[in-house]
Length: 175
Image 1: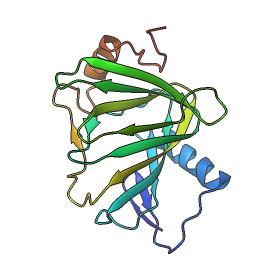
Image 2: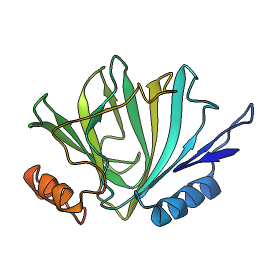
Image 3: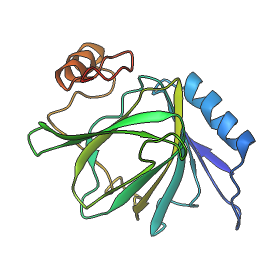
């Protein structure tokens, strides 16, 4: 395994994810400034498939983004998250509360290329698998929305979350 900021990259020909791995990812997310930590099952950002297991603590801000020209999908392993889809100007188009298999909630979502979206963990923590087409060596697989606050802008993030109906503490305010 090779580590970089916020992630561990697999370097083995076979990558296994078990309960201990999930526990470690959740612990690392809890300590992370971003509230997220990921295990990249792919070896390199140059790989044609970017396959990740991501742990996120409740209320962590995932800035709205899209994957230019690339499809992507999320599969919930543990916990619950709210997925929000936006139009080009930042208006909410769709909301989906998702949970692991057996929760009674959808556990998988697929995005066509260029769909603006974000996830927001509403349980104590969530663990999910994200898969998208690579490569992503220069960050080209991810574009943040200019209409969304940047990481570190605490007041801007709080105001944005309230605007889209999400409490900064992780509660869905539309219900």
